[in-house]
Length: 384
Image (tube, rainbow, N blue to C red; front, side, top):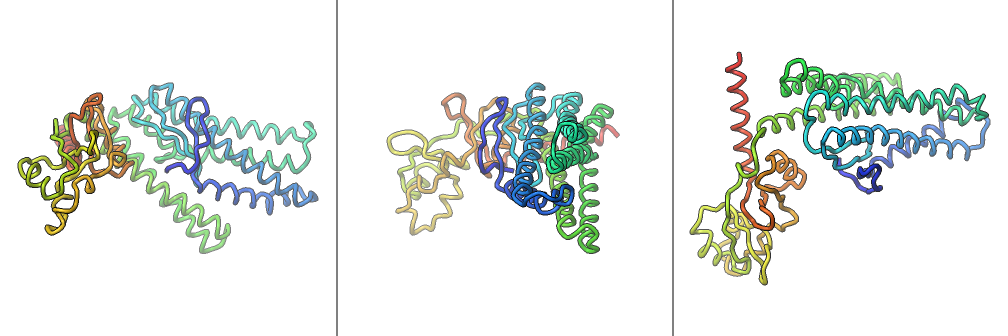
């Protein structure tokens, strides 16, 4: 989930939100101001309910941010790099590079979020119970009480045992510790996450059909269930990729020391003078005056109609540098795979300092994944 607006940094962690969060905030505020708060604390002016609903919605989102921020802080303490936090339609998401180094670290990173939500909920609960003694009116007592319930519910929901929820990661750390097999633990908890999502979709459908909890609640429950199923599949797929590329470096995948061609030549001249004399699958091309203009795959040159090859310049066919992933030869291949996925790029340039030393094609990554998967299958067979 990508952020739409960057809010800034908290404890060194970048924080932003997706526009879908605005939808959540508005519906929360409207639901509180138009229903729950007037029912629990009648007799106040309409404006008071609107202000209380808006403040309560913002406070809840701040509590969600605290939940995610705790994950980020502990992850950095465990040595992981944190890209940032994004708040969106279904809560929050902490972007981290790499995986937990051991089961204990995963347990601490995953468990701290629900713990923070529980502490926040219990704190609001204590304030709600003492609202009369503190001199809070019924309206503010109702808002604090709702915040107590929703934060405790958030803690409980996140502890459900299925990926990608925190409870699924806690269970994963336990299974990983017991079996010493990270991938096996991931498969088990991913299945649990998909099963949990399917149950939520089923319950949501029943609520929608029977109107036992209203249309909106049923649709929302099914939406969350669908998200859990999709995220669990994605987690398992990502784990398989990481497992297959374990120990593989970018240097193992790259075409080393690619030749560089002049981008100002026409496509036909480039084919005649450069591409036809080499098996290189793509060519970095220079712009007039120096510096790289981009990367031209051989397929892009061949795709130009023959009658246009003497008029189209090679640089016009180049993939711009800002659409290419960049890597170092000594870094883990899995890090490059993630960047290529984020940019949706099929090529990467490999630099050693300022020197271009290699190219990586998506098909090279696919071949490495097939080899890694086959190797893992052979190891599993030998262990039976």
